[in-house]
Image 1: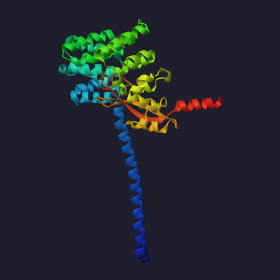
Image 2: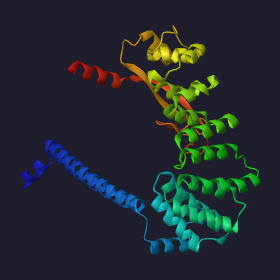
Image 3: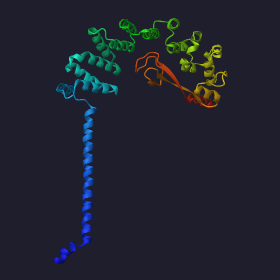
Image 4: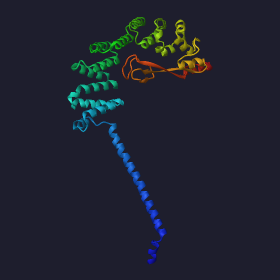
Length: 348
């Protein structure tokens, strides 16, 4: 028996027991940490799921009336949803706040709801809300501005022009809006013949000299001869994309020869040889390439007011709603059209 206890006092046995204990503790610690981590992830997923879907209307009503969050917090939450494109959740919050929120904020909340409907594309509902605001508060320029946008998107241009009258009385600058809506009215008037439409558009432009791109984009498409006849040389750069895409047979070489920018533009395109270089980098590259490569110009459009970039031309910015604020930016790209034409010719 004594010999048995002596073995337990062997230093080597003690070391073995020590390392076994370390192994056991490490083993259980590792699996316990994995278990806790898994539970934390489950808890976090459960927490995040609360923000992926709003409570039902009854639950939302209870949450708002309980007052755990202030009305301002709910408004900020709704604004955040709308900003990230989740209009449905934003509309639900605004609608509940209108029912049980502070009546002092009723008009402002109603306006935010109307604006959210407009952004979501529910134009009829947005129109009803803005008209409701104006019935009780006719001198509300924000509601008038959005009502004008609603009518414009619904192509009810005569009603949009009527909205300009109260805006003018409120000392708002309506000149560009008026010209823009008059041009839209002409462009979408199905009762006018093309020649009559062109004549009226030219007269409108002669009076205002605004919305150059919008006017000449249409004129060069339907009547290039008349477009060149009324061409404003000072607006050449504004029309770079329209002129670049114009067919060669519609070019007016006399006007091109007298305009330095047009000489560079069409030399870069390969139609003429009237320039040896350009101050515009992209045009200079194309001129020096002498059309030996399949390079061409592509265009993107930047709002001069809010700096949002669009891949397509616009006449009213969809972000800040400013008119005629589009700035053209060049970039070099591969000419897939030319490559496709050469491949077709090789098969013939």
